Image (tube, rainbow, N blue to C red):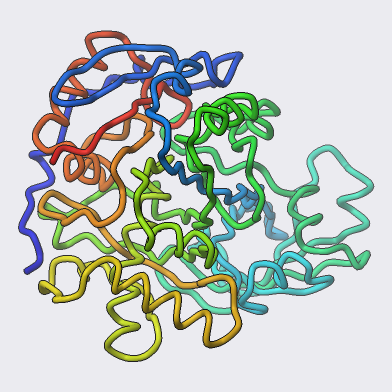
Length: 403
């Protein structure tokens, strides 16, 4: 049954001065709130390796943020902002980034009412010779509300990844209320980012340095990666009165066969770095259920965890995914998920969560509440009273799941 949750019950008073507008000089110098067995304390993030119990499994999201925001101008001078969401032609991220001369993307289009037909040209306010030679143009192929299918064409034979590097800006969250700056190119990216495709950073990972990760590994924790490309939906507020009226956007994810085997074999408590890693890991059960029932895994729907109880164990669901890949000689599961995690969710895989402090009345607050129960409010009251920094560039927390 779809939960009837009033989003107003998950609000808290966040004032502008508590939002971290810029990152701290050192990634691992942020505060770290610890929530365990109902108790809350404060540490420093670089102490995390000594806090984690050994013998666990820590899972990171190694997606990479792309400079996906582009600004074009009509012949009339009207500025059109185009925010690339996901590739359409070619539909695969690697092929889309490698495309030379032409590609199509699903985009959010700003000022779309003033763009009805005809190509628009990339703004070149500093008269860059490189931008002029590239001659990047965009045509709106079709429109659906604020989003649309946009065809990009350019010269010089550059791959589209290079076009974005030259022409795009980092799509920092709108709640920072500032334009992206040079510091964001480095700091709105995890140090372990690998696969291009996100339009928002998995911000829990921004605190980790290579030395922090190595210390965690030396302490006996296994390190593993998943990849979920974060979409612009992460910025969308819940506008409906009840969460049942909120639509989650599809986000593509991939996970290696070796990690599926580790999760199936168990014996290690799982720490997920960020809500995107959580959503990837907890989607696996429902992908496995579809594999058991249909012989192949399907994208995970938004309400799959709540529609019914399934008779299969987590091990059975993971085993089905493993057999599916093994029979095809493949080493990576590639799917999409729209899963929403709210109070009442049955946890299958994740035991601990490293995460930042999220916006009031957001789906991410609901995920935290599902993880720690009603203590989410105590945690946020504590963070406010102890002057923690909030949102993407803010401080961090290590939360132990409430049993």
